[in-house]
Length: 243
Ligand SMILES: [Zn+2]
View 1: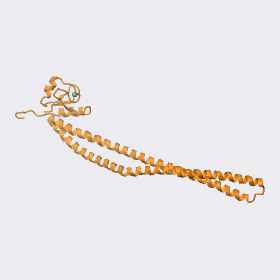
View 2: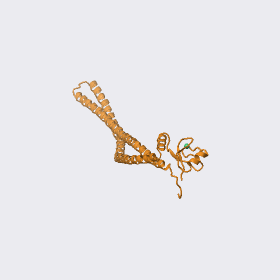
View 3: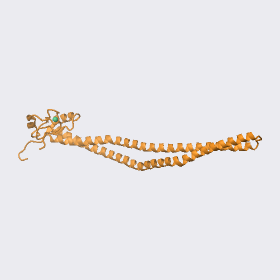
View 4: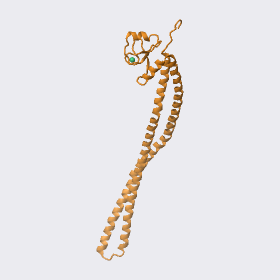
């Protein structure tokens, strides 16, 4: 740099943009964290719901078995009553009828008991295994989810701290730009809401690194020493040369 009196007027803008870039990233992360938490909670709710469903299915099956058993018990009671009544029967025909009725009822009771038994042997183990599997998933998840959510909370706190620091740095860097040239800051701030990044290099083929349009030769010459604000003729971004 011997003898060079030119100052890189764009450097303070580049510095400001670097801070803004970090702020943008952290702001995006801060916005993203509550969404990640919500997703995780929704996933956990799904796992819990699966357990609830499995438990309900098991309970429904147990109730069905109880109903079959109750039905069998009710029929057996009828049989006992009929048999008691048989002691008082006098006619043969009446006795025959009663015996047939008892046989029929015993058949029904057996059938109901067999149904209950079959459900108990075949269906209950399957449903119990499903409950156990769903419960294992919930248990395995619970700790992991809690840890993950705590991690996200901790990260959010870090991000907010970092952002507070960066906002201070930003104020200082914006001040530095403004001190050198208030017009630069105004231009940068206005363009920042529409284009990112705002300050880009004009590469050695004379192409804007923001929109990739070839610039006219005069732009190339003006950018040469980074002494003034030169805008891309296409996208308006501030051009500088990586010296
Ligand atoms: Zn451009």
